[in-house]
Image (tube, rainbow, N blue to C red; front, side):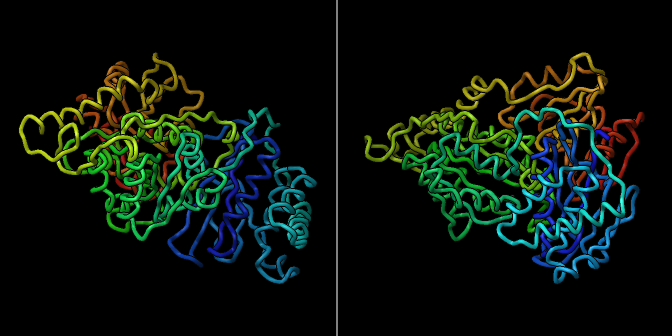
Length: 525
């Protein structure tokens, strides 16, 4: 087999994701690639939680929806489907005093079935859980059960995975990127799915020589970061859509005074509280038009874990180079989904410092009113006009700087072009893998938009838009800026991401006038 997908299911509180990440570590040490995905309700305990991981000797861009192996850690969490294996874990865990070791038993069984090294896996288990001797024992029980009751399903032999040994999710990768871009002030109020970045940076703030603060709310978060920028810091924040809504006045303030702050927005379904633990791409237009008044801002969207790292560094440097707000759009899939990537400590550190005057180095007023060159308030027509033009001029400068904030995958001679942004990158690359009929344009800088994008899109015969939202927000943006019309639009907006097989199925549809309803919609635009 080229790839296999394992799914672990059970109630919250049983260490389902912990077990999944342990399996990820074991397969990574064995040299395989993986990508994972988890589903869980907004509950501390209980509910139906799942973790699934796709493992391969080739790079995995997106986890498969269909599982080859299912492990249910508690009764009632079994699922119907093909090629699924149910393991009676409650019976086995009785030997160790209850359900607490069910997840480790399951890992032993899975490793046996996949034909992984028993000795190496036990060593990783022992290190993962510390000094508890019962975890290796639990692993052995699972291995022994699977050895007696199942057949092995080995994956193709491992190829060189290019030293991709670091396991991390998008939150952690972006945090590393901020570090590599010289960020030394980070503020956040916990809000799923971006909370993991606060945890990671707070834990490592001494190591990174960074000040990390947890203020009382998102308004304070944005204002403290803006103040830190004024004082000469390289500042960033992390939140989700509802928190970013509270930050909008600070975004406008930063646009007026030239305070370059990075705003990381981990999208989740809305409006209001929405579905806190699920995924969507619903805040693109909100980010582009966030803040009142007219001023330049930058909106970026990484497409995978490695790009989260690079985008964190790039966002910090763009904020400092142009002294503008930089908004980075991620989502739950990317924030909390893990992959194995190259060691982030080996990533190049590139730091651009702001040229703005900071306290103690001359006199400058950071004034929220319209102001003249020295910072003094003014309502004079000429000065007001000059201020607006100065702020908007930065957009042209940014477009001269950026040269690689979009990327074309596949051949320019392909008949069909898929266009998208953000975390849909993975599923698109899986769907068109080894298919020369399709090319894919990933737009990574969503504002300001480079007019080269228009030329690329219009050079293809059939143009297909793919977005994880209900209103085709990128399509609207491209139409308003470039008058681009798409032949087909594929949308999904039920809180779940696209999966490779369902996107492949949609791309085979020949009649563009066929309409499909939520959660997967294809319509003529």
